[in-house]
Amino acid sequence: MTTLSAKDVRPPRQRPPGALRRAVSRNLTAYSFLSGALICFAFFSWIPMVREFILSFQKTNFVNSTEWVGLENFRTVLDDPAFLSAWVNTAIFTLLALVFGYVVPFVFAVVLNELRHAQGYLRLIVYLPVMLPPAVAVLLFKWFYDPGAGLFNQALGLVGIPPLSWLDSTTTALPSLVIVSTWMNLGTGTLIYLAALQSIPSELYEAAELDGAGLFKRVWHITIPQTRLILLVMLLLQIVATMQVFIEPFLLTGGGPENATVTVAYLMYQYAFSFGNFGGGGALGLMLMLVLIVFSAFYLRVSRDRT
Amino acid sequence: MSQSTVQRPPRAVKDSAPAPKHARRRRKTKERPQQFRGLVSPHTLTTRRGKIVYWTVLTFVVTGFTLAFVFPLYWMVTGAMKSPDELVAVPPTFFPEELNFSVYAEAWDLLDLGTFLKNTLIYAAGAWFFTLTFDVAAAYALSKLRPAFGKVVLALVLSTLMIPPMVILLPAYLSVVELPIFGWNLLNTPWAIWLPAAANGFFIFLLKRFFDSIPRELLEAAQIDGASPMRILWSVVLPVSRPILGVVSILAVVNVWKDFVWPLLVLPDSEKMSISVGISSLSAQMPQNVLIAALVIASIPAILVFLVFQRSIMAGLTAGSLKG
Image (cartoon, rainbow over all chains, first blue to last red; front, side, top):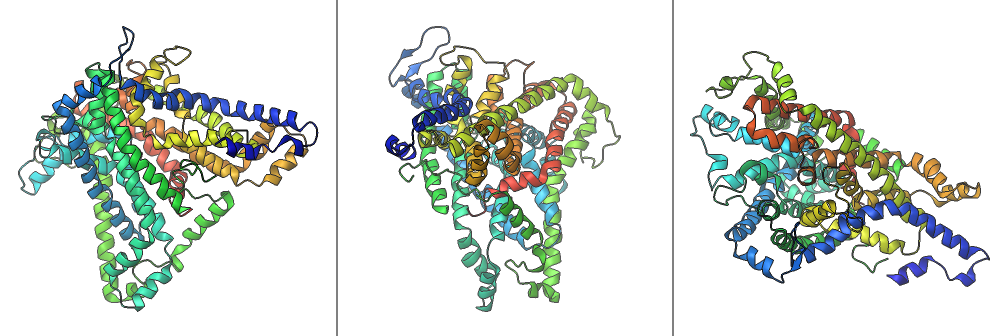
């Protein structure tokens, strides 16, 4: 890394007199410009990144001084029956969110891209839920999920389907969270894919059509390969984003029923703020970090290849 | 340049075009209808069968999208005006029996929405100010002043993009409870929102990449005229950077407005809560229609911002995904 910077600051002997002083003053100016951001990063990103490791090996107590406890936090967390549920639920949530939240926006984008009318309106409304504060969207759906007066059961009643228990049953609770999450996020993916689709040269489709490729063949052999990289980037981004799921279980179910919707991030929050065990929360946070870093690093590689 | 994995910004997909090029591209897509073709050829669409299929799909999509994305909002706005009895009525009423706007006033008073909205506005405004001041200055320094170890600093800044915010939630919270070195407790102060908001590697990356595209000659001319770095930033760089400043401003405000878990932790005092946290903390004690009215009120600013800045918001979003 130092060799990199040495390239920037050229060796002093090539410089005219006074160059050294100018270099010093230039650096002073530069670092004073950088200082505000660097302080913020230090306190709220860099120190926390390091501290995440320390935290998980300590017993943090706001009253007494902190002490090192080795792997005890990890042992506590691993012995917790909710631990396995949390990881399984997070994995299922992420998978389901991919099935809906990844495929659906792409299909939407492909269809929207073919429409010559109402496209502005459709783009607008598909992004509307993304603009709502997530807490508002989630609380709105909490009301829709209400077993008696909720929109969903009322709608099912109109077509003669018996009501579902949505958030109250162990089988439907997690999928219900996925529905909310998908509803409030899919606008982003749709618009991003739409932009990517519009950069596909139309000659490709023309050529394929001349060769007799049908609609689905054109999607499979042109649309998807042409948007392959953005699809991969969005896949990784979405995995990282959905594995941090917190607000849905926090506001809708509180992790229940019977731990059916406990997620890793939610369990981490519970450890720190309900059980008063910051070390346990830190241990969970560290595990989540190690998993997510794999995806983030892969994402970095992919997006580097793009340019 | 190529040594470090984090050297290359994670969101490198962002379109690196400087302003004029960007505007040109957008104009081009605007004129699209004449030459554009997608999967389906324009010729197919002129046939009788093509027309029938097209209009069927269009009707279906417009109806489906409206049901999925507008109807829930309609249901929310009208649901608030229904009495608790009407809310549970079977079958549900499509229009409320009476347009009872007083529920909104009731929600405003009961949940103290004025305070929550004012708080959120203060947090968003401050976050916007600190983000722009600190991140613009930092990006400018990294891009144009090129200090020693500038690349190390950039790599460190971009490395924060690898760490999702949720996984450092607890240690970041500890920083707020007792700021390292200074030992200050920032809980329940706006600083707990403002300063972390400015620590945004993505904004620095966006700004730096834009500044990189400003021709050096422009700055050198100003330098020869004796302008200080501050003056150059203010009078030369910022005026040509309006598009990216707009994008960053909107993202910064929207981020704070939408954030939930961070204000939940660092602003536990009910006098200091943001609108999202405030409403959800009181949601259990409120009659259903009052709560829904509160949700409507909380969505209005977001939707207004969206309708007004629609173009920049979408440009910011899609600029990020076009090929680089």
